Image (cartoon, rainbow, N blue to C red; front, side, top):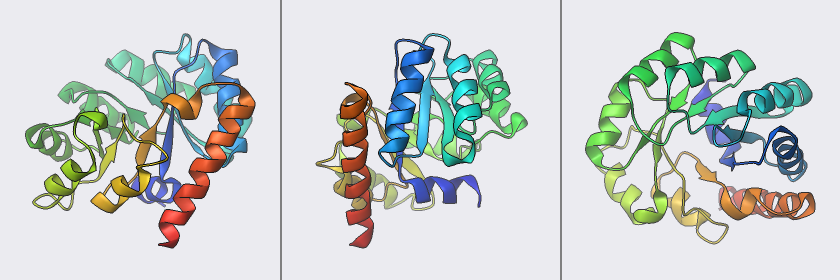
Length: 206
């Protein structure tokens, strides 16, 4: 199964901004227990790559561990060496995407305008992270997908349990969710993940 098929299957990418390695591990375990398997550990987490390596070793194939907020080739290389299976950035940087292609790691760079989205896609993005999603809303993706139906788009920022259905109906290949999903106690995080996984199942059931 290629990455996009995996991304479609997983549906929700949980964006994790933790206080450190142990906190990141705690969040990842709670999210996985709640039924979410795509976990994006961001570089805003101290010792991000140590956390990635630990989770890859602990979770194996039960989770798909990626790296987020990548802003340099060095960061990308470090995360790849730690075992990250995908990479996400808040922006599109040609050299960064080229490095991802060389490493063979699927990358989802950020874009918002049609020009940014097409540039990132043409350069080899696995999907384009529509960021911040809160600035545009689901109708924006629907409008942009009309002339660009082949481009895989993943909105992040502004995606919630209440509007997930609208984003998927607009044509999102998957959604990125952080905020309340990956914050609070382990019990709260697990419960939020269960509710999100259940809503995703309802959406897919039609």
